[in-house]
Length: 460
Ligand code: ATP
Image 1 (cartoon, rainbow, N blue to C red):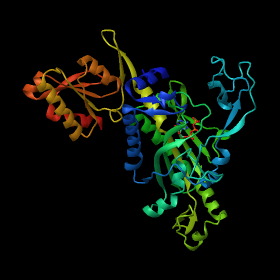
Image 2 (cartoon, helix red, strand yellow):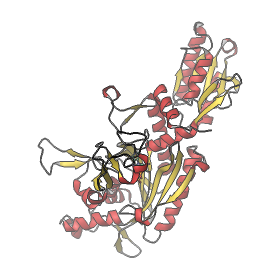
Image 3 (tube, protein in one colour):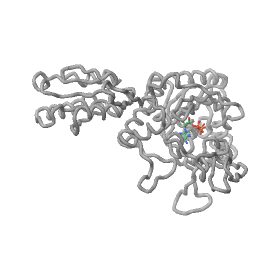
Image 4 (cartoon, protein in one colour):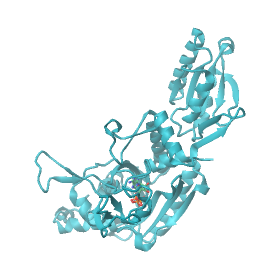
């Protein structure tokens, strides 16, 4: 059984160092969270698994890492300045600010058991609120010395389309992927790391010839759902697809399918997979003309400034269509924690909290535990073994002797360590150690020299 309440996850995350509230010692900063020692490992492992599947295991992908700060023209012509807005409602009585389309999820500030408007509070009409953060650029503050913090990583890919094309000689179809931070000034950040103001995205812009876009869109939907299930360990029954209705589509989208996950707060979006058509490349290219930036393009048809593709079959330039799978890293971490969290009742009635993480995602792969911490030969062998596994197995391993063995097992179960290894007196005699499996709690004895291979074969 997975986690049923957000409190179970929030409490585990704080207790064991996965995730903390941002700037906690000063009372926090709403919509920000910090990843602790185990959280950063889990998050990195998720990003690594995504990169491996989407870049290394395909022949049609390139990766980039582009700037968070971009020329404000990018956001003007991408349409975000005008349309990246949420409807905002103020309450004149409690001074609360709420998203008009999420009133059902918001609490009145004076009467937290009531929704805004259910109290005597007077609500204003909704007005458009742009969610992009602005910051000053350079030492002099003036009206035009500003930049936005990017609200999606996608535009960094679009503006580099021709650079990547020229540098790699790619032919359509091909994709460019990026993992990085995005910022949105959400009106009501809430539900732990589900809706925050600073988060990470794993995005692909996959460029295709117009006309092939619909089929490729369907292929990505299937491939990405299968990845969340087979590689990341989410249950298929906890995932469903939501066809975004035409009236709710983003300004660039022809069709968007959201991959929804059953979080403890209910079914919510984990990843959006959109057909962005030729909207972004087309819009940026047109503006190159309007702004007179395309003078060079006319001299050189392979200039990197016009975001088009030269099709050698038709001898014409075309603007590719784009399929965009866009997943939130933080929502991915939350889904993984929700799915992995289990409370088992042991034979003696004790509750065992165990994170049944896929071994590839586990922050720690092996914990080496000495059965007698006051026997120097056992301690020495256990420490040596930990270092050997770390070095030869190239996986995060820890040594722990700070409690009795039962307690040490519980600690590792709670953070999802797939294997605990104990060193005892027999180990000193015949060089064998016991390996305990996190999920079955079964133990086997193997030669210590085989440990790194044994674990490596099982953690992938
Ligand atoms: P929502 O409707 O939940 O606000 P969205 O449709 O605006 O999400 P997209 O613009 O499609 O989200 O962004 C792609 C992905 O980025 C989302 O599926 C989600 O995983 C992640 N994401 C978006 N906004 C946030 C946020 N405020 N906090 C955490 N993750 C986010």
